[in-house]
Image (tube, rainbow, N blue to C red; front, side):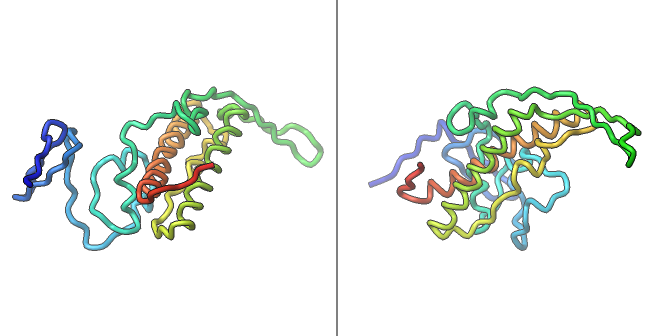
Length: 193
């Protein structure tokens, strides 16, 4: 029996004389050159979730990258706390000397404490789920850095820097969504509780 394909939702790319076809991707992509070895994509000093929205060559430790959502949704459980931009508050730190005299004051900007707690809880949960899946099914993939590695939980010198770190952290939760998605999709059943 001849198999038929619905080409209306896919695309083909010709690059270097090779045809690459995807049955479910209509966006333009750049096919990267084939790497000699599989390096750690998280070794980059300036990580950003947008770095992981183009195709990469298959490797066992990084195969889960193909499941990173391009347009993540934070409106469903367990990601509701990430749905709206949290409030950024101005905080003042006072430094004192040994005689308890104020010697310096600094104004910083950070996410509201309640939002920090909610985001930290969501981070803890998704990491626990990822590790449980890894252990249960013997998945050898390497886990990505945690969203808090972008310091959503710290005070920053300017409002602009605080907002940037919060946005990077939020986008990084989508990286973890990709890891959990590939782990779940590779199994017939996973009892999430």
